[in-house]
Image (tube, rainbow, N blue to C red; front, side, top):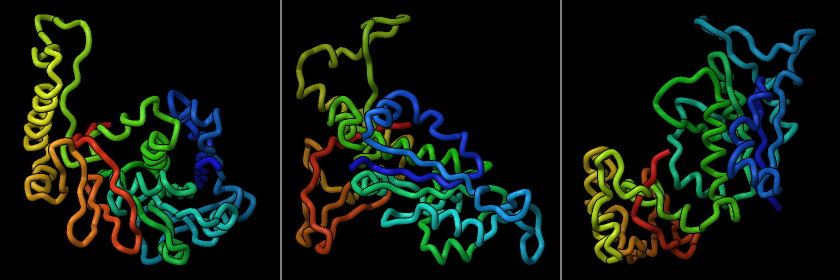
Length: 274
């Protein structure tokens, strides 16, 4: 069974958008994942299909009604997690992305206006998720970001399995720089070690670069790395501590405790940017 995404939005034409292109688009056409988009306005009230109303307590803007949103959720709800894209949500981390990719799919609620009535969020047990500390016009773009992050981890989507492993945010260090032909461009040469054929020296160079970049650009991540929050050997393979806890996947700490055992995945210790 393919991974199933349901989107609840008042702007259904925004989907699949960029997810209809490249690897995600090919995977969608091949049935590796499916997309169903529901127009919340179909559940709106009155002749104009109203989905919002003024906020209790006053204030600017409008709030999406709980009865309308709940009806839209009811049309697609099942065992999949319900995610509400919100700037006040828990930051989206690669650990959560991987969890979602390993599940059956997700239902994504895209808010608009000033937000969604809190009562329906609580009643439905929606997981609030944020893609960053900034404000967007609605939840549609965050939904696309989340889906792209998940889809690329689905089996058969990326050409090489290791592409999803040796990346930024899949381990505690940002990824090393990449180079390709020509070897000399605009007076700038590729680092000599990369053309040496010495794989051990190349690995050491990449590790040194990753450490330097992470320490400079993301001292918060480097602090976790230096304190041993993520336990690695020299090849970036995660190990188990005496409690059997398997830590992995970077920015958020994602653990498999004794209630959710699982074998550790070999990973490169590098993170790749968007």
